[in-house]
Image (cartoon, rainbow over all chains, first blue to last red; front, side, top):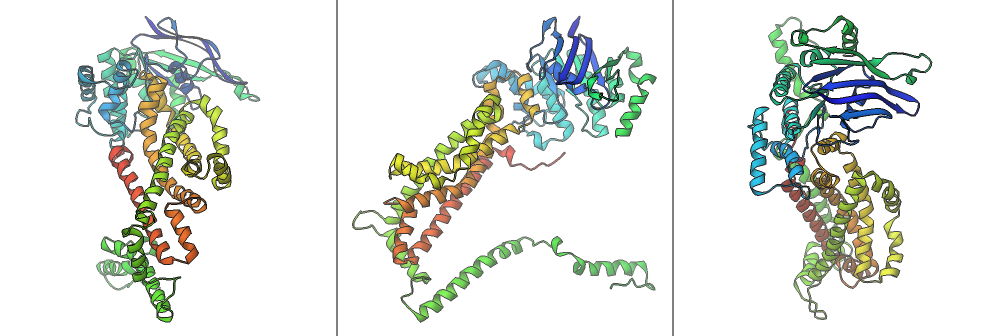
Length: 260
Length: 297
């Protein structure tokens, strides 16, 4: 079953082409990693899926319906930074999604619905390893803990698709490995469909069931902005191949190393 | 120039370095500690008081009827009359009546200003259409010197309470609205998008995401606005009033009554400090997340 479908999508700003002829079908339950050099439109692609931006040509379908042109509860997101609300403690951050759904007027739940919501939020927080910091404000949590919180917050509303925008990019290598384990487990447990943008190609191949690389297919020296990026490589991976990086992407890996 | 003793062991070298360290420390690295800090802060204040007392007593010795730099006993006598004895004509204690009238004007103006700032600042900061519509107007109003439009206020609202309240309100609100709007607009886009992916409407984003984050900033900005608010209050009272702290000091100025003016200035300062401290304490208690320092990364 196809969860998310891009049909000949273009993104243009005036005469600058960012993305061109993007046609992709994302399978239900896939863990799609999106890689590519800086400026190759990875983030624009994610903004399209999020509804933060609309394609200038083409269509995006979610479960065969046209995608809402603004962010909504069917798509959860975790950004690299600023994903959680600094003025809410961990529990309230996770409760927020349930409170929005249950109380459109005030955004607050009371009594029995609140207790039920709280139990769900606490269970999820315990699952991501934050059971002991329910009352902690994000500022007092480490970077890895903040991302754990952001993931729990996004998952509480059971989104159709989870979008990750370089979610582990700002973390220490050791913490990043822990997060890989966590997101992989959550993906299996909840049967999630995940779209993850990353700079780290090894991470992309380690976690993804499919790796899509964005880059410019054509290049005009005189007018570099006139050709946009598109999906130049599309690797479906089975379990056995998930650790290796194919030779075709080695040069990108080198490029990444050069950037740092 | 310091020379390393060549013949001695490295152990002695270390020792020399330790001995030399305190004298080699730069001034910008030297910090007062504990009680020293309090003492250092008190010194200039005590020095100024001492200087005042010296000058006052010298002038008093020369001319016992000197009014320009009154000695403490003269000020105490004035305070006794102004703050503890009822005026036989009005039946009220002048300083209490002045304080009540001034705080009432200030309180109404600041309250209205805070509510207006919150509503306008949130809407301009969060909603692009409101920003496009009202942003330029607020920016224009905020550059008008409020005192310049005081005559207009007197003409429109008369010489009563309204014109004073409106002056303070107009004096502090536009700047506060601009500050709060830019603060709300600088809430990271990620948070706003995240709220929407969690199902928040415009309204819920406003009341659950923007409003709580705007409150500590509003309080900060109120604390800063207290100073101009007092300036406008005293200006308005100086020009047209029959009661109020500003009215009183400008009234007794005619008799060079420094023995009354100085205690009034001290009293106004105390009121301002208490208001500032009350706002800060409220912010700390109600919005602890805005005051906790980052402990880990």
